[in-house]
Length: 310
Image 1 (cartoon, rainbow, N blue to C red):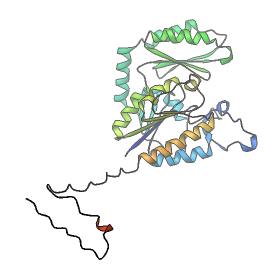
Image 2: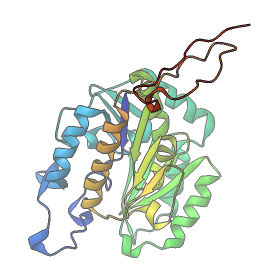
Image 3: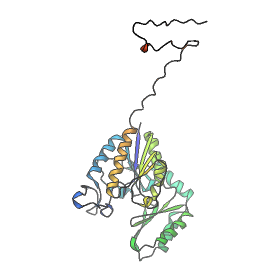
Image 4: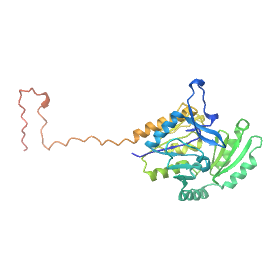
C-alpha cells in the first residue's frame, strides 16, 4: 500500500530557537541539527534523532513538506534525507514537483480564489488601515495569494485579532495567529486540496498528516490519521477531530514524537495486505454428519465412511 505523509514544518517538525521548549535540565537536552540558515544566522532546528527518523520516513513513504511558507522561504530549509519530489508551499497555492511549481495547479488555484472570496487588495487595505504601529512591525504579501503581519505579541490586543477574524470570515478569508505572525488567508487556499492532488498523482491509499495551527485543521481532517503537538493554536483551543491524536509533547520533542508516529504508521500501512483465509468447500448435498472425529477414534477401531445418496 502506498503511503503519503503530509506534514506542516514550522512548529511541527522544525523549530526556531524561541520555540524549542527545552524545559529539561541542560545536561539532558537533546542534540540539535540546524536545518535552516537565514542571512548567515541559524534559524530552525530539529533533534538529531528526528533527523534520522525523517531520513527513514523518506525511504518508507512519500514525504510531502506542506507549509504556509513562500517558495523562497521553503527553499532555505535543508531537511535531512533525499529531497522530496513533491512539496506544498503558500498554504496550497504552489505545488512543487522536483522543485518547480506546477503551472496548471497554480492556475486552478487562482481561478478558484477569484470566484469564491474577496480580492487580496481589499484585505491588504483593511490591514493597513487598522493595524496599530504600536505593535505592528512588518506587513507582507506572500506569493500574491495572502497577507500576514509581523507583530509584537506582548503588545497585540487579543480583541483586535478576533475582530479581524470576524471581518475576514464575511469575505471568504480566515485568520490564524502563529507566534509573532497574523495570517489572513483565503478560505479556498488550503493544504488539503493540494495534498489530495499529490495523493491522486502518487496513487497513495493511506494519508498521514500533522500540524499545529488553524491553517492545518483542514489537512488533519482530510487525512486518514493525523497528529497535533501539545502546543500551538489547535492545542490552545482544545481542537480535536476523528482519527486525530493530540500529543502531550511540546516544542522540538513534539516534532520527534510526530516523526516516530509517522514512521510506525507508514511501516504498518505499507505492509502487503494478507489475503483472507480460504473457507473449506461446502459439504455435498445430502451428506450425513460424520460419525465421529477420526482423531478421537482409538487406533484399533474401524471407521465406516460409506454413505448412500437416495
